[in-house]
Each structure stands twice: as C-alpha cells, then as structure tokens.
Length: 210
Image 1 (spheres, rainbow, N blue to C red):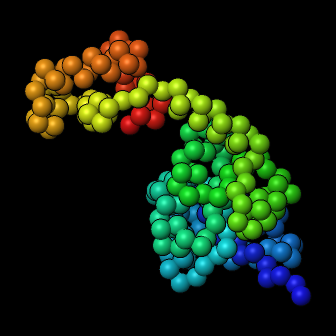
Image 2 (image 1 turned 135 degrees about the vertical axis):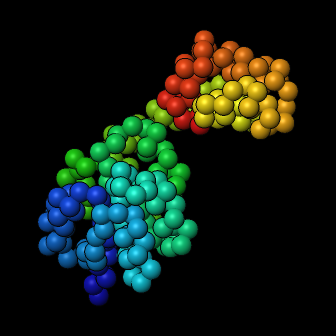
C-alpha cells in the first residue's frame, strides 16, 4: 500500500525561487505541491482554509519576518512542520528560527536531493539542518554561552539606552534614581568591555542582547 504524498507549501517573496522549487519537486511522486505565497499574510490566508504537511519558508518576507511567521503558524497549526529555505547562513538566524519552532534549515544553494531529504526527515518527526546551518548554529551557541550574564535590570537599562533615552528618562520610566541608572550603565560598559554608548549599542545588536 503506497503512502500518501507529503503536501508542501512554499513561502518566498521571490517568484523565481518559488518557480524553481516547484520545478525541482513537480515530478516527485512523494511530494504534493499545494500552493505558494510571496507574503506572510497570504500564507496565513491559505492556512485559514487549507493546510500542508510541510512549509518551505524564507526568512526575508516583505510584511513580517519568517521568524515571526513561523511562530504564528505553529501557534495556530502545531502539526505543520516548517523548513527554512534561506540565503542567511549566520548562526543567529538559524538559532532564532529553530527557537521559533522550525524543524529544518536549508540554504538556497541546496540541491534537489537535499531538499527532498530534508522534507522526508522532517515529515517523519526529526529535525534536519544542512551542514553549514548546523555548523553556524553550533558556533552561535558557543558565542551565546560565552556572553556575560546581565541582570534583569541591566537588560532593561540596555534596551532603553538602545532606544535613545537619557539617564533621566530611563530613571522616570523604570522608577529608579538617576544615580542607579548611571551605575547600571557603568556596569554594562564594564561587563561588555565597551567605552561609550555607541560601542554599547553596537555590541548589543551584534550579540542579540536586545
């Protein structure tokens, strides 16, 4: 008795990418292409009335990011499996997508056989990361483990600094004295080994502390 084909939906803002993936998978008996969308909104509209076993999802969408879309889809449709198909090979993207619930991560240079392999493995309930993504994620996790630990209050002050608020404004927002804000700011400089606000914000952005 033959198995039912795996239904696949594609989300990418570039039609040429969608058409390319369709061309690769069209003649595969184990795959059923059920549709595509070039925005997150259209993906959610499709899922309001239909479904898929697997969504191949880009990160860079024009309305909301694939990271947010992944969370929204899985919140409403937890049985769907999401495989990222992206040009981004940085560990931070891999980590954020996997934390959002994705089951796989492929780069757009993946060939037909790797895409099929990822779909098959993920549909069976396991995760699949391409070699580059797995290596990037491992390096990202090592970096995260090496980052200085900030207190809850230090994080709050850091976020407010990054949003451009002065010590006086942060003092009012967090109901703490200006001296306390200044103390937290100095602690942040010391912990993160930076000398000024510009360096602090740059470090926070590069290390995903915001």
